[in-house]
Length: 57
Image 1 (cartoon, helix red, strand yellow):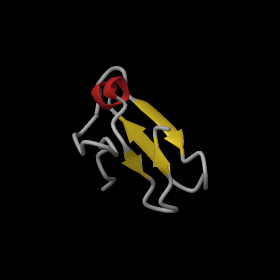
Image 2 (tube, helix red, strand yellow):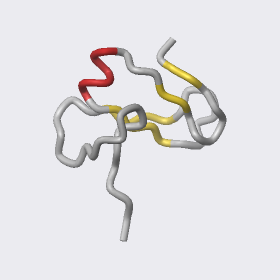
Image 3 (cartoon, helix red, strand yellow):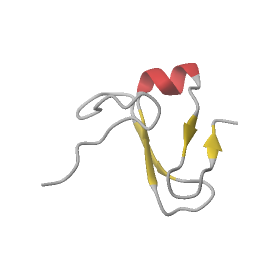
Image 4 (cartoon, one colour):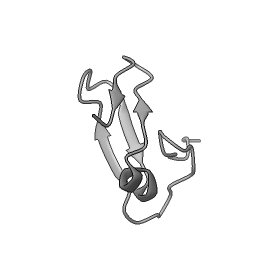
């Protein structure tokens, strides 16, 4: 059974939610980060669990 995708910032499930973004960590590329539309809009901070990269800048 696979994990349900959650926002890296607010931890809300984002299955079938419009405006979400999935991208590889800009620093290590080893972790796929997922952000919901709300957290993207308010520029909520996130930290990559693999390398501790913090964004947005």
